[in-house]
Length: 312
Image 1 (cartoon, rainbow, N blue to C red):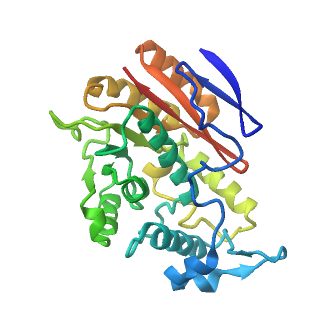
Image 2: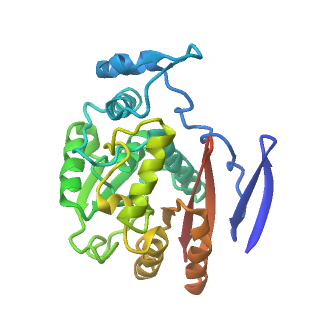
């Protein structure tokens, strides 16, 4: 496997892959097309007035919110979805994940780059594994690029909430379908029917190995934000959203194994990989099955993330 070192806007980026390099990799910033490099709180407040009470001017004379305040984070996300993506409404059940939209949008924008390189810009259909109650990836894919999306989840409550979020904006109903995966031991099986074809699949897998590990990670996040009042909905989440036996490495290896069966029905499989140390295990599984693959890196400030793309 080659390790390539390139420059993008005078910044060094390290990328591991076995496919040709593309020019849109970059570091320390969101994707060039991602509009969420900063928050225009005045405009966001006009689109969603319930955000306004949470906005204040900090010591640097900059408008912001308290990101340790669960209600503030929720209403920020809701205002973004209303202002930028024209949603009528969006809500979450108690104790379900409230996703940071800038990072979620980055996955969508980089994924669009990969599709465009393959000549795919119109009539794109995607499959989101683990859609969650927030339904964020199908919403972004539909509203930014006009993709037709199918979201899948094993949690019936999440499925119900996602359907409600889609129905709140009639335009979304034309492009998004939500399905319940009734077999928790399967990922694609039972969802992809004979004759169906998806241009891509995407996934944000549960990345912790256990509930204890997820709890420790939540504690660290709250500590970094100076909030010790307990676990709250923007950092908590249901067990299937945050952890599974074996963590993300085992989950992704299962996904790769099962993807072989559906390699003619999905143009390319993709998944986020939260922990860099898991990449070697994932590459080993992909090499074993003789898949073509590459890793696309994303950085938002100090946070580094990536997603792996593979096919045959």
